[in-house]
Each structure stands twice: as C-alpha cells, then as structure tokens.
Image (cartoon, rainbow, N blue to C red; front, top):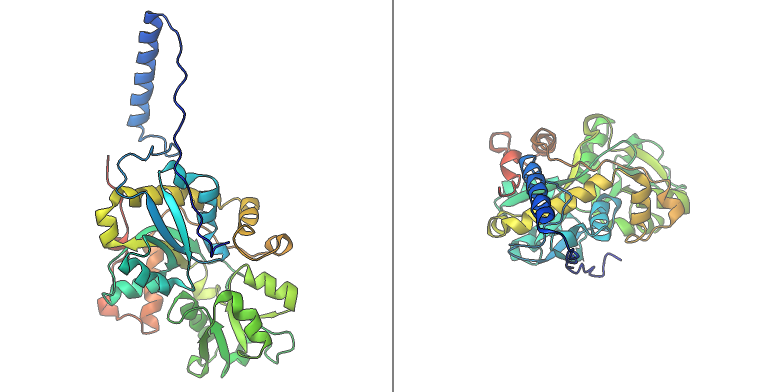
Length: 347
C-alpha cells in the first residue's frame, strides 16, 4: 500500500568468478575488454547499467506520491529494482495532492515528489520555492480526466453543471484549470461553479452522500465509480484545448539538486526507466493493483494517458498559458520552464 513506506535495499553485485588462463590469453582478453570499454565510452555508455552507488551524496530518499495510476512508473521502478541499481533506498510518503509536495520539498521532509505542473509552477512564480523538474510524469489523453455524477442525478450534460458543486482533489492545480477550460468551452459560466476539495479516493462517496453534485476524477477511480456505482460521465476535461496537456512531473528543490546532483541524477535515471516501461499496458495493470485499492477487472478497463520519457519546454508552456488565462500568472511575468529543468552533471 502507498501509505506504508516501501523500502528498497541496496545490494552488491557478486564478484566475477576467477578463471585460470595462460598469460598470453589473459593479455589478449584484457585488450579485448579494454577496446570494448572504450567503444562503449565513445557511444555514451549503456544507460541500462547500474550506477554501482559510487559517489552518491545521499542514498536514502523520501519520495512524495499519490495512489493513482499516474504514478505507476514509480512502482515499476521499485519492483524492477531500478532504484536499487542506482544505489538508492527509497521511502514513499502518500500525499493528498501536488500542492502538498511543495512544503515537504521546502522543509526537507521530501527529497523528490510527484505533483501537477500547476502547483510547482505556482511555487516557482510566487517565490515560495525554487523548483527543479527532474522528469516528466504524465500527459493527458481523452477519457482519463472526467467529471462524473451519480446515476440518479439530474445532471446529464455539461450545461447542467452551472451553479453546481464539483469535487476536485486540490484547488488551483491542473485539475481545476482543465475543469475551468472544459466548462467554459461548453458554455458554462465558471463563476457559478463551486469547487470543493476532496481526495480522489473519497469522491465517489461524496457524490453518493450528496455532499457534491459531481466530481472530477482520474483513474482508477473513474472506472471504479462507473462499474461499482453506475456513475455517469458529464464532461471530458482532456479534450479540445486541453487534449494531451502535460499533467504532472517529478520534482525536487533547486537547493537539493545543487547540493546532491549525483543523487538527483540517479533518481532521474531510475524513474525515466519506469516511465519507459509504463508503455506496456499489461505491466501497468499488474503494477497498479499493488498500490491502489482497485481490482483486476477495473484495472483492465481503465483509460490511460501517456508517460513521457523526456521533458519538453514547449509542452510545459501550454500549462503556463492556461495559468495565465485563468489568473494564476501574469503574462509579463511568466516563468521560463526550460530554466527549471534539472540537467545531470557530466562525467
């Protein structure tokens, strides 16, 4: 479970077996190995090889995360031993939303965290915390950002959401921004809509208790609510202007990255491998059930976004433009996302 710290223990590779070779053969073999090593070096090295833990400034790190499908690369990286290979001992800390990651990174309780771009960009913009973006985490796709309501509710179309109360996990984040954009695109006066903060796992119950009229859900909670409670989609918030919009990123504080560049680079390498492996849907389905309260039948029906393996300032600018559009950032004072990207040390 995500609420329990998941420990990854550093292990050592076994030594090479000793072989009895005649001296000429030993010399020849040494030359071949040297040439092979030189060739690999010239090609930039094999990114799949473990770091051997040498030179890390810190080996034990705490990572803030959420029990949603977006964070599956973290679980994959753990289960496949990518963090162990890099010499990292990772402890997980569950967060209610990306905004909660900022104080944790600022006070040192977290070394790395998953969070939505809006929360991290807001912290940077308001000088709350100097942020470094370590790896892109998740990108929206049609059907995986839905506003749902109860099956007996009178809400049947986007226009019916005017004047209603909608649950979101955190205010002033990517969820609220995409909701506002989608509602406005469908003719809803967003000034009449009330957004209420409720954690994703509690949204279905909030609708059933009539605490809210609708909820902005993500997977696996979308499919779970539809299968188990018959909840109905009212609006897809990942279409039109917000289709393929960047949602979340793995980040750290600039101070931590500056003081621990090798550790940050090690985390980056491991999580990017997890991002890459998340392209395998069967692996995603298998892994999600290990940390989220969801059954296998629900997992097989989930609508998934994409897990990028490289950061793009151009894609990030879409989020900044949305923030500017809805008053979270002045156009004349827009931050530069490229300057926030962590670049690993050379050598």
